[in-house]
Image (cartoon, rainbow, N blue to C red):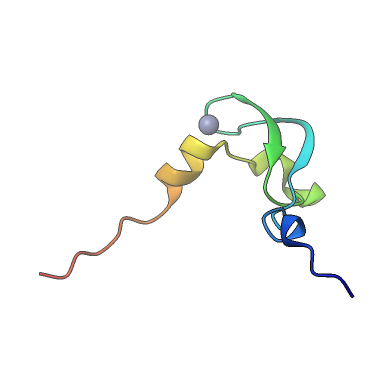
Length: 60
Ligand SMILES: [Zn+2]
């Protein structure tokens, strides 16, 4: 079995489609995962997704 280094960098599969961000309405054409059909109306673009993440707790 030949080792193919090119297949390694491509392990993230982008799913192309036509979706809309539920937050800001931005068109989403690519997702790094297969969206759940039941949650298509809850999709968020990258920016909104980042905003929806809980803020990191900083240890002082
Ligand atoms: Zn958005």
